[in-house]
Image (cartoon, rainbow, N blue to C red; front, side, top):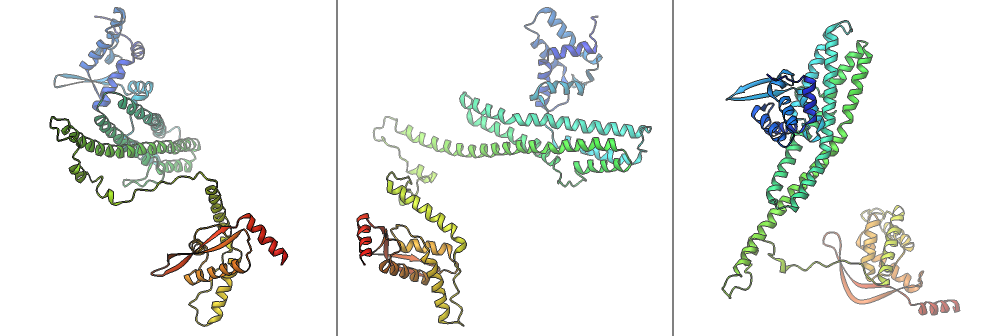
Length: 483
């Protein structure tokens, strides 16, 4: 009989060769079991030690033997089901192995989180029955259990935050590898979609609800309400040190909500993008296959088929139906001439000037007031004219259209008769006394129609505001001085 290793020596060998345990833990997580088959353990050990020296192979086999692991307390139970022996490892050993490999961290599920919450509620109910004295063993045991459960919860949440923060990078790397390899893209996208959906629905969302201070649960108080009630009981019974420690733990748990929420937003964005991308890809793939079949028909020996017969494809897909009945969209691009940019700058300056003068825009008296009669119309026109006298104009191809937009957007109570009065006022000022000699009003023989409120229409003669040439401005200035 060979001499077995002690627990310390066995543990040292396990951590010197962690690949064996890593494989077993991955298998347990993949199959969602809490045990390891003895045959899988033996196979993993033999495969790992195959290329090593004979002395190392013997040492690894002795350390990983079932009897040695059970004798050292690293395997706590051995069960035989249907002729197979199932080994249940110590939770502390599995936890240490998971801590050494970030990819092995277990995501918190709703069931595990609810288990923590039920335990804390039970401790809260049992705590008032104690004497709140360190000499009372019931109180000290409850306090130790409470601190242990809260510490375990904080540690598991921190591990899951680290795991969640790396999942986006891992998914991006997997997506990049699949797009470059020979793997079927549609199959990979489907598997990736299922994986990210499971992660979001089963792990991230329950954790967010668990760490939400405002969450309302049907079976009782949430996590923070439970901790606050325990803190209140401890403070009431003058256990200030224990209350302060639990209060700091609650603050740590509250701070974990933000990084998990950030990861949830990133994963949700990736999930929506993946879903939309899959729909778009499937539609394009279907259309491509249909066109490919039409192309293959032209590659036969029949010389009459030299063009694709796409009439059936157009009717089925609906991509091109009615396309010839629409005008081609006009492209918009910046001009290259200096006058284009001058007009653009003039328009911007005019809009900014109107925005600055918006607070000074008058409120025209209502035309519906019938008690004052003609005096009301005079007051309305006078108010409009005072505002027009301070209005800044610019060169435009259609003064009526431009003036209608400016009056409608800045004057409260504006109507079509106000536009007619404004046009007459500007025409009269320009013809009799022009306050801006560099501009001139040009009347054309072209007519336009302006649509008003309801069924109102205004047919007007188009008027342009143009810049006066410098020579004409000089002549006009000399004539004014001579007069």
